[in-house]
Length: 494
Ligand code: BES
Ligand code: ZN
Ligand code: ZN
Image (cartoon, rainbow, N blue to C red; front, side, top):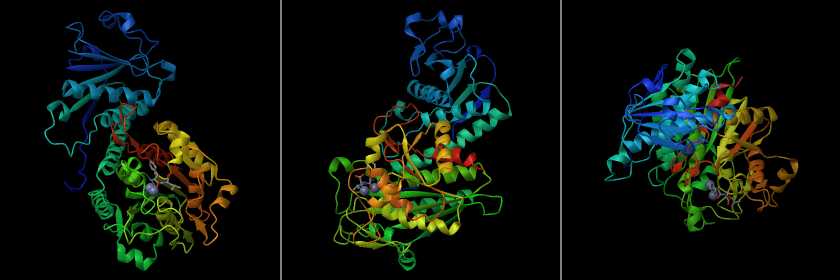
């Protein structure tokens, strides 16, 4: 069972330019706008009141020879002027989910009416929706029914053909593979996906993609003074690790971006133990690390013209007689001391080492992702990732990437007053500052370790895991949030 995450094989996605209703298919999926009338042959198959085309509406029709496809699924796209890449992403995910349900191996997908999107954007969204809608984490099931394991083999998208479409498809498939990798890492149970296993995953990724990967073990962490990671990891039988993954090389014309991820393979809270229900999903506390893995894979596959360094602090936070305690004072890699008041605010402690380490690359930007605070779930729910930044231009780039990728972010302030709140009576910093502004004080804590380098912190505690998915391209468990956002950010970075 403790097998390494396998290299994902993408579905075959083809593009055709003709009329989807004239192409034979066991299932054709037709995206339909609220304000564009259906082709008359389709309109003749239903009662008009049964389908208005609101975003997400579906209606399965059996045309019985009226059109070439055997089955026709109408998927509502809402109003045409509001349609975005996200509309296409959701509709195509709905399409493959229906194909899985009906056990159709080859599905055709098209849109009724003109899409006001660039062909590259459209094709990328189709590919992302199709690949992510098909995602399942089935590794631990035994005796599944055939409809639960059925794999759709091929999707044919009816849209404009051409070079831009081809590029969009390739990008979308690579991005989706990155997201699927991140989901697999998060969904892997804590006993299997422990810090050394995460280190092995990094080495495997490096080998597959030609990245330079270094994994620091306990002895190296001790020798080099990674006090934060060591303190948090002390209570677990699984040793902590620090992972460095490097793509490309630094040069005058090539920007260096550091991506930093929180890799708590399981967060019990430590001695400040979490209540049982809060612990249920805490194998997902390495969602930031998973996003960094996924993004590194995409960056390498798409050969982006950048120098990207992925840094992951990996540890398991457990209570034991050897665990770090409330009241302990930890000396981080930076030399700064941290008073630990609550062992459950461990993410910021392991990240302090990684963020300080990032400075050695003299990066143009440090972008860090972590499932850091429950407070961000109170603020934003699951509809946006919290964004905190020391440089507005960097925040703006990430906000824009969020809109385009569909992984929205929302900025909160990092004013001086918040930095004051995390000063300790006994050490340089304390790791908690009470409930008020809990997500912001956590962000302020992190910012103390990046020096003057432009820094953004993304709190993904509300977006990395979903119990009951609201979007058709999500499924229960890890969402892989961050991969699409980071890829868009890096693609447009200049
Ligand atoms: N990993 C948690 C944050 C979290 C909560 C992620 C819910 C996903 C869902 C983090 O390590 C933590 O426990 N934070 C504490 C901080 C507090 C002790 C200041 C929290 O948010 O309660
Ligand atoms: Zn915690
Ligand atoms: Zn945590």
